[in-house]
Image (cartoon, rainbow, N blue to C red):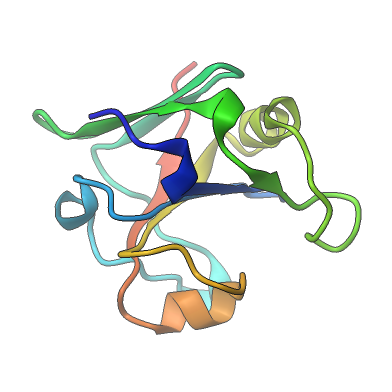
Length: 131
């Protein structure tokens, strides 16, 4: 399923985050839990982060294709607030061996990972990258 880049936010970091909003795979993803602040592995899912397209593949017919160059990327140099580029996000995902997919009903007004994780509305987990 093609995901509108306007309904997506890519967050840079040691473990990068892909935030899709209103994604058709939302209910197929497990409830997101992060004991100790680390997201659990999202079993049966994989991610292929590339500069032009980002593919999240799940079990069966579940999956997303994101036109990555058009998606907003935040994080990096200024404590997670400076705009950044998709190439940087892909490099973060490569170093981390994947990314956290945090599916929500809608994008948050403020990016507060703790609040998002404790809301009970997020679904997903750490999705390993295919080599």
